[in-house]
Length: 100
Image (cartoon, rainbow, N blue to C red; front, side, top):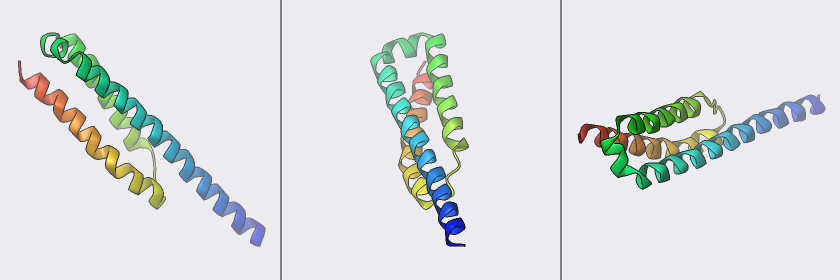
């Protein structure tokens, strides 16, 4: 009985750590996209294809992060800050798109 309980606990922790790792990878990708966006902001305002490409990268990242299931409180707490950062990044792209 103790063995089964311990195994269930370890499986739960393993899933939580896997989700946290996925969130960390997504956060790193978001930083890469932000650097790309900031480095080519002048091109983004002039080139619709470049703007669309960056916007699609952000949307794929948003879908991926929303797809990560975080039933564990660790994942829920970790997921709060990246949501604010992603919202800020999409607002920057929207602002740039509306600027034309």
